[in-house]
Length: 479
Image 1 (tube, one colour):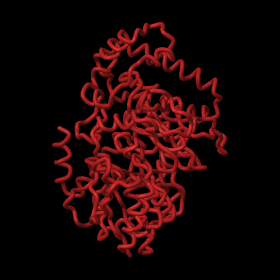
Image 2: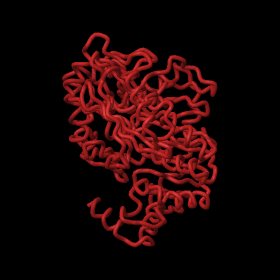
Image 3: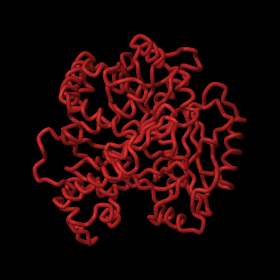
Image 4: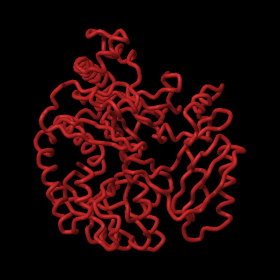
């Protein structure tokens, strides 16, 4: 049904598409930004400077609630019984006993996690296609949806000095116009949200001047979207001295922001990037403050970062992110393998004064970690392109254990010496592995329009074997 609606929308004339977007905006906006939303925003702000004991007590109470409702779920009843968890087991003790919830199970058995036979009125089902194309269903009740909107308002937008009412442009997943459309507008406006949805599927050099002209006339206070899309616009603006109107802030999500992308985007829009880390599953949220540090919102979910044996890693060490949502009582996610890798900051003090846990970095997707023959994990490839300023974008693909392919979209002035520089940098990064540099006109996106900077094609069995090797970890500056 959804695909039929999408097909009808994309085949409609532009004026009809605009009417649909405006109507949807009013339908979506009005019930979600009422008094409850403002109350929740105030609560999130009031908790920013809580101490460790207050956070612990809050998480304990919420976790107790999550376990109590999870007993109504067919999946969790079985899991709890097998793990020797009783209804009166202390919540943090119970949490330790719960086995990890696999992403594939959620993808194929989402409704087995539901705690009610009747889905409450007003519940919205969000779907995430991921990399397999099989959608994951995440159930949002009205209360949970309000919380999911309040957290980024209080701890992302407001930290940058803007609100949900300020004018914005979103470069995200939505296909707002047909692929075949050749002339502007490549954006649609939602008056209720004061937001223009811009297509990320039409950012070719021939049409980028239209985007920049629109951004100057629309004059948004904030820019939101995939960093890869914003980087494409920023690179063009800098190379052609054709700039958008300055903004108050840029908000990025869904992809890792590279050093080069951050620098270009901030120069193009004359403001700071406030990156956020979240997921449609709604079990974690972190965002950058004005000092650039990633603060975790502990009320949204409990984050564990573990090694391949399931033990917590030390601050500064790379590990897999496991999250337990504290707010979704209809579809609890307990110890969910969300698929990301990250590390806790060694220094947990921030000059902003907010007493919230700090992540040093979100390093990418778990399935995109690359490996060397001695078992080292390699996730950071930014330094491979150090000294090369003439590429538009690049993607590192590990084909085999000793073989990499780097796809490069060349920019102005790209030369054979840049290929040599990349190869030399790659050698110092992964050792003697063979590296092929392949110049291409574009790099494919995922079905949802996201850019993957790193792809590992090694079989899962081989990755597990490498992780088990002595010293098999993320070592030094090679990570």
